[in-house]
Image (cartoon, rainbow, N blue to C red; front, side, top):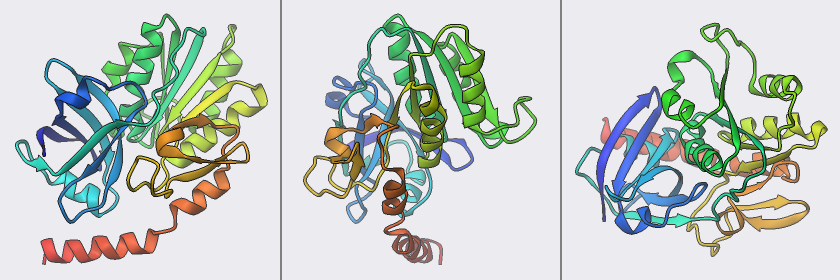
Length: 278
């Protein structure tokens, strides 16, 4: 059992979950994730670690409410127990001093990109942060990310930030406007955001790493549900990743596999909501 220290809504449909997990907090590194079960009848879902605090013995994640399990998590409160909270899992991000790093985050990835940007900054790199939101009220952790960034940009679909454009176009503009070369791009967010960033950087030959988010069950390489094709080879995201070269990912396959249980998930959610909210 892991006790919830804090669960709050950051913006519509996005929640923060901070859990007391001392052994996990001691070992967390940027890019890793935890496997969570909201109750003993639920499924196991992966949540990327967005922050941790060794003194508080806490681990923080940001999650998007989409299916039954994330709906259950969004209703939990401080003091509630989570029956399964396992981690840290996955390979950490390869942090090194390489020059200029462009960190891109969208949706739950805004939280997940924070420890990555912080680590690259602490390693002596120049960090440029680009956050993607559909509207200004969906932006969160702005000050946290600015504190670890040398430059800060936003792509948005409204006029609030004076940058009404899609993330790949803003990314290309940043690349073209820079006098110095961008040595690496790291993107976390929905599958389309990571795909779009990979396509945008490919013509420039900029190393682009993405944190993949396929369907996952056990998180230790045993079930094979999270397999992806990278560079023509089958990889298990939970043990070989979650970070891969975005230019080598078979995106068409990933998009298709993520839809495998779409109808089942809708039925599950409808059944659960009918029981909870008759």
